[in-house]
Image 1: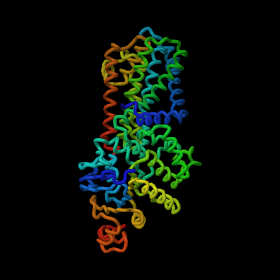
Image 2: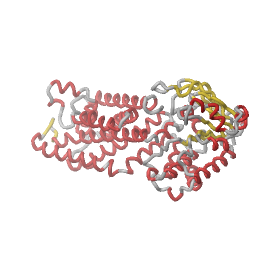
Image 3: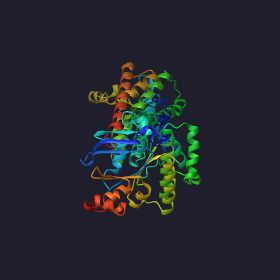
Amino acid sequence: MSVGANGVPALKIEKLRKTYSNGFLALDGVSLEVEAGKFFGLLGPNGAGKTTLINGVVSLARPDSGSVEVFGKDAFREFREARRMIGVSPQEVNLDKFLTVEETLLFHAGYYGVPKKKASERAEEMLERFELTGKRAQRTNTLSGGLKRRVLFARALMHDPKVLFLDEPTAGVDVELRYKLWGYIRELNRGGMTILLTTHYLEEAEALCDEIALINGGNIAAKGSSEELKERYEARNVEEVYMKVIGHDHHG
Amino acid sequence: MIITDRTFQTLLSREILRFTRVWMQTIVPQLLTSLLYLVVFGIALGGRIKQIEGIPYIDYILPGIALMSLITNSQMNSSWSVFDAKRERYIDEVLISPMSDLQITLAYSLGGMLRGVVMGAGVFVVGVPFVGLQIKHPLMLIVIGLLASFAFSSFGTMVGALATRIEHISLITSVIIQPLAFLGGVFYSVGMLPGVLKVVTFFNPIFYTVDAARYVTLGVSDLNPYPTLGMVCLIAAICFGGAWWAISRGPNLRY
């Protein structure tokens, strides 16, 4: 698919700065490049700027300054093209309570301009893939937490994005589902999809990600493959790297 | 194109689905309220007032009651829809989609407009045979209905996007829209008011929509109908501009 095509990075963030209205500086001029086809992990404590970074790319947070390119498309000036390539599975469940599971998928595809026929084929595929076929006619607000999480995944994939943002996707998910999800996401990644994952589970990040960036106080504190990071910080695992880079001034 | 885009059409159809799916809450009670106004004011009060400007009282108030229903419903529809979506953050899905802010604003506003038009038309459909009047300029009535509905639906979109608490939504409806609707000349001619109240009425945007609707339905109005139509267009443009600003730049929608 998109692996290394012309060397254009999946995501190129330059000097992104974001101050919230309460004065909190969430991103302090972050620059970050994610190569196409990578499984990329973004780690850091709560409030470090992980979600703000994702929101900044899709204009859910309006950055003060800086630039973002998605596969070479300017995320602000060419937002239609850029956003069509991005799928987001957010940290907080945000499903439309008026819609059923199936409608959630179909409407999402529509919001992204996917033609009707293609959308319904894709919805069938997603319903099956996430074992939601039996729940298709159920309103999303009547689902259990785990099911809602599955719908969020299926929804993010409905428009066949080239980059998938997974923001704390396994928080509150049971072991079995987590295991299945990772299997599927690995498969998508092998098929060429770029994955940007934020997580608190460091061993998860270590096992899955080709490359890891540690973010703290709105800045990238360290970046590299887990092997490189372990070597650089003389650590046995990513958790130790994390503690060395971030841990000393942060608890939890 | 803004409106031929499937992204836009999907959001608009979602907005229509929202109010038609719960029609027992969104359509039936409001229609009954309007008919109640017609019966109580038209028949009870009409027995005493008889005529205004040569028109039977019940006929005189019908277009105003239809407009009142149209305005309150279109305003409520979009303000609740946007506010709900914002409160539960599913509006994020729309905000990060390839839709432009203009398309998003338009879809929410047109959704509310349709709800308003359904309600306004409902009052006419039930009321006209009941009252037995003939509409003078039916095409113009549709135009006025669409414009007024669009204006207040856009206003609702703006309110929904700016509101930070649920009370703001009900407060805007009960403290601003409903009083303005009641004081907008639905039940009387401005000529019947004392000087000060007459002047105050000219600052009420709902008055212009009611007056225009009355002219195209009955052929009588307080003001010259053409400037009034211009005024309705202006109100619609201002409200839509406000809604667009609130969706695009408003402080409480994006982080």
